[in-house]
Image (cartoon, rainbow, N blue to C red; front, side, top):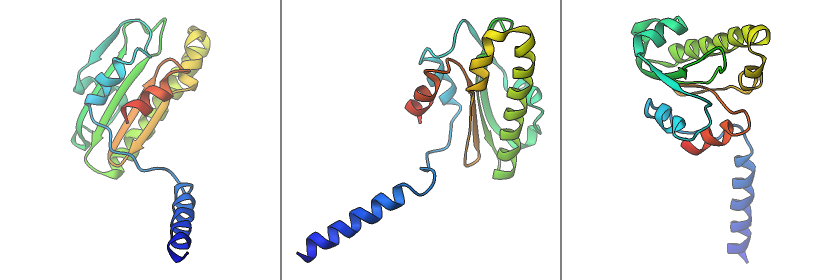
Length: 153
């Protein structure tokens, strides 16, 4: 009977703790960009952006970026699709990268409302996630993107 009671208490604590906050996942890696591209959640052609261009595009300090990778829609007049991962040197840098991603999406969304309304739902459903010193930005099919991100992570 004591064994059964102990098991019940352990199970109750485990259930309680599982509801407390965010499940900690592993940091993102630049290889996650390619993995997400392979899921098919991005419409049209995507092109790879080199690291220096990504750092400049997001207005980040080059000394704070350990690695990055990204791809953008080839025809930005039709699609706002994008996937980018930043691996930053520390948490403070990662917070700045996350803020830069939010600012970029807000700017793209403002423009899309006037010039490419079809891109608005994708931008409104953008995934921006910071895990440790890494940041992911993904803009794609709003219905399938969350599952695709969850599938790589």
